Image (cartoon, rainbow, N blue to C red; front, side):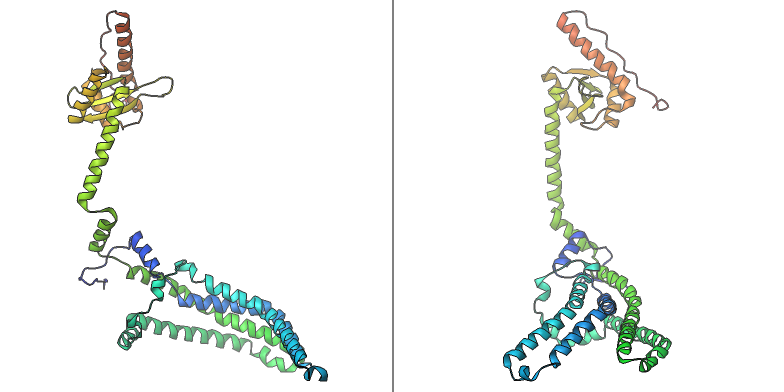
Length: 376
């Protein structure tokens, strides 16, 4: 059954990035207790296996230092304190590496699926946490049932693995009584550590099931209704009227910048009334003509007015104007299939300038050639 919000709407939408950030600030991140238990026990078993000899050696020294006292030391308070300090330092030196390993594992394991999240809000006192009614609701909820199933599954899996392993190693355990004390202690410690590791490894199966479930459950809890998504969009980007006004202002600023570039154009190619495209070309710095302004209807009229006021040549070529408007982008070079047609127009414009400067008869205007669809 789909999740429902307080107003009855179904939570069908995935959480937005803002929703995820807000949840993390509140300390709501996916966590798996089974993953924590598994890593702590497995690494604890590995630590005992590989550091066991080192720890036993230091503990033996600790025991020896604590119980081997001379008569003079027994009756000397200072000697007793010195012996105690030396024994304590020996014990700490023996268990310190193991404790450091456990602390590191305990701190970094939760970061594997939820990342770092520290929130004072999560630590705040909430009366509903100690409300017995809410406690009973949590106990008999779907989550409580899931926790019960996980606990029973852990018990069954660990029990089966432990029984199978101990049954297979029964001869070795029973054979410890026939070994010397030192050898039996060493062999027994190894068997104990190995048993701990095998039993702890059984929790990997539980963690492998629980981690995906916790990720899914966390995503389900943060799902949003369509109305919540719309409300968040309004909060983050403003109301539709405001966004429309912002877009309008942006368009006006873009048009203003475009109109300021018209006086730098070499030619304005028109429809002649519906379309206008202003082009600029400098053979020394440009590989192809550049579109500095373009528009239709009122914008086209404004481009022509600015062009006329700045003595920019206006060339009427309806098919070419429509083709440029349809295929070109502002502040971009014209497409290659229009090179020849635009080159004819620019050549005419440059020849016209020379003719006017020299007072000779102007050249005849060209009829720009546009390639067919097959040629394009």
